[in-house]
Length: 97
Length: 108
Image (cartoon, rainbow over the protein chains, first blue to last red):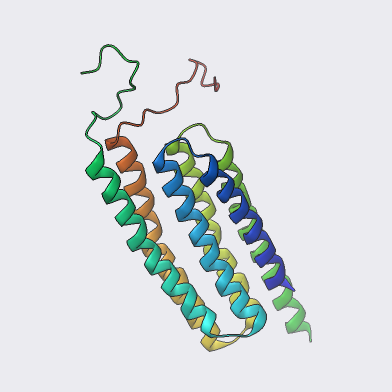
């Protein structure tokens, strides 16, 4: 019962993060939303493991969390290779170099 | 029987607190103005995770399940904060300016 409520709440939170992923103006917003969405998915997997009494899903959740770390770092690395503009300088700022 | 009821109540309280944090963080990640504030809100959502896992462990009340859930909580605790830091740092290095505000602190 409690596991079902937790699973439903996590699905709602994941849906909200998915909206931010679809909207996110910058790529960093999308990475952040994907990170949060993926964490919610891993937690949902663990919750379903309790709900369905399937211990395999706990291992799946741990693997999801660890794979997520690698994927987020890879996405950040890709973005950092592609951008060399100075930090904190909006394009319409005439003073910035 | 009384112990079972107490266990269910404790699990419900933990699950409620965890879900409140998670949903509040999700709404913040949707509503806040720039990527830094959204990272802040997403961390608030991530702080709900150990509460939810504790609620599941209390509800399941099994040693092996508790061990797996503790491992999952440890994995989240070790990977989440560095990743949030790296995302915000990459946004800063990538030239994302914080959202402009009025002097009173109100959002434009």
